[in-house]
Image (cartoon, rainbow over all chains, first blue to last red; front, side):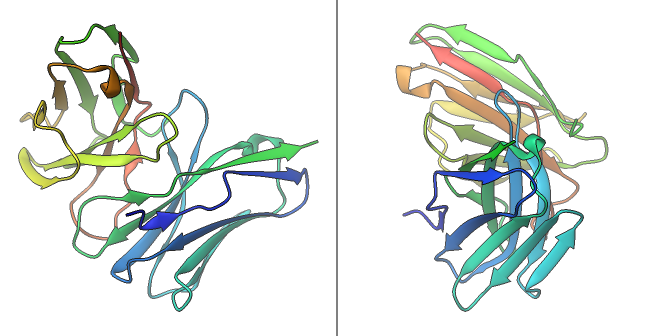
Length: 112
Length: 114
């Protein structure tokens, strides 16, 4: 039972354009969502998070949008840079619980 | 650099053997989490320790065990290893436990069981 889904295994975007990564979840008890970036041979690096009481959070080039009614969140990267090429994981947490539930990841490639 | 350290970076061993993976959390963090990432899989939660005590358990096999020591470093012990245990093992840490906290990940240990 995959509670967090990233349906696009890969995404290719031109440098300077917007990258939009999507994530869907099924458990309405999730109240905290995070995005991580992962380079090969490295651990996941925290990017940005959002609480379920918000619908948008912004940090520099990164913005996360949360649509609770649709159980959907997205990560926008503007403008996209070559260094953004990595695998992006969406993760979610149930209030009071300890573990993060991860999606399968989306490989983002930024083309020059 | 997240501040979480893991050793060793790579480990190659044979089926039936036992290995120990080590993790040091960020300075001041009391919680340590262990995750497994197998080929083509997302990260799967194994177990969490908070200030020396087991706090939560996930999909951890009985052959696997962990502990957190008084200096807050943690070890994950994998025994009677099977080919399917080959994976990346990540440790993460956070300041407390259970709240809306970010978990910061170490670089991982790549385990290959031959």
